[in-house]
Image 1: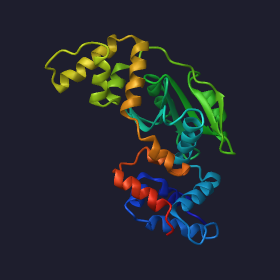
Image 2: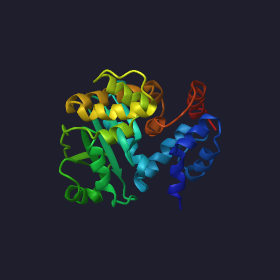
Image 3: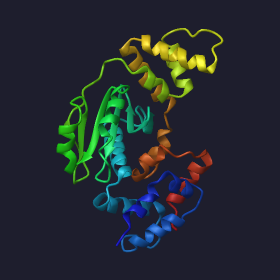
Image 4: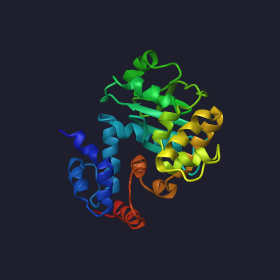
Length: 278
């Protein structure tokens, strides 16, 4: 009997970063569960593909949901060269699972069969305060729960049993004011200061504390449409990852690539190790 929870850990950031350092121990351990499905001179990339396929049928964990969203929506609908994809973006006390920044900002909150739904509405309420659109992505078994228990402003996407995404309710575009308190606490200093300076001229000689307070006050006064546009534009540029690296990896690792902190040397090494026989 395979331990799917353990097998799924090869998709974690730490596991992929270990592989970039040349450590294939975790991959070898996972490969032992798939000896009948791997070639004689198998590569880590092959192990990832075989394991991912198995998990897609038997253990659709959070990473799998997020990776499907990344591949189907960002790669399939947009382009990674023009859209920015964020993972685990902090919004107040919450973390948005996936955020896509293109012409507008869209949040995708993932709820798998393994998740607790108790905090869902609080999370969605927070996301609606800064993002243009918000979707909840659920398995087929939670379709009715999502349709009946989340706000009508929130779109509902179902990950079907065939691992396709079906939008069963569209998300309404929010055009009200962004919550300045949540916004300024969700961004880096350089980001919120840049946005504020595009709206008003900054007073000279501000301390860090004064910069924070001034930016928050600017956001309170700002036109809603302008602030939404600048938020999306600034975040899209400041959080942008190298699309060439992400697209060069196996599609099973697309979402993982966004969280990796690797030097150019380590990135090149990861590409080499992935496709080298073990």
